[in-house]
Image (tube, rainbow, N blue to C red; front, side, top):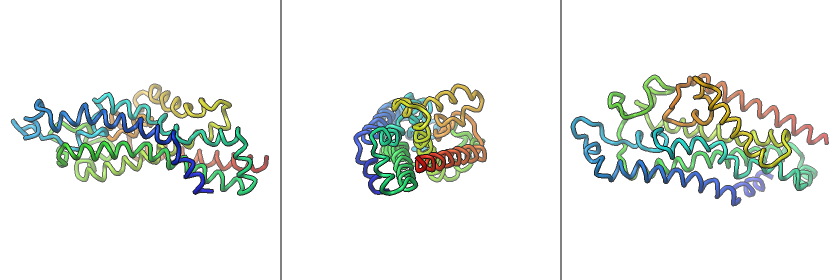
Length: 271
């Protein structure tokens, strides 16, 4: 059942479409920011470190480090919507079509819900992370990998930001942490569609409900807007957050979704 759900999730035109949207934004940032940094004449003095300027670095040029780029901002803003496109509404459509009842009768609701959740989580995480990896590798082809320097004034990560010390000591570990965080949060955002499938009676609303929640929190949290997924997943950290609070929020969201899905699974089996 797991293999069937994974095949349905990844061999899916919507999965390809979601990846294409992410790639489009990642490549747009490469073209408008990274290419001028690496090849443009206007940045030649910076590249060679003239007049004491710190040369361009991958860790200050890729899409996770350029909050001034409209393409970077747009990518992280629409990410809660893009990651839901591939497969997050599949449970709703399975129930409406009768496919879910047929599979549950043969294999049990527990296996079906577990397989469905795993497939949704993995597709969402892949859509959230793969375009960033492509952008990071593309940036490394054009801009040198130089250790971030806190006194240069060209890196947006503050030394007092979450894991700011790690960024200036081991930037690759910092990037890896945010990639893992992005994978996990994107998976949780998409899996929330499985919960919304029981609460709303419209496929479109199932898909956009997580994005609406993220967007509302983005505007409503005020000084704590950094905990909205729209800002939390951005490695440049445009808003200050605390690591313990982040782990608590993500953990509580995961527990809430697990509890909801277990309850729905038992209710579905009883029906």
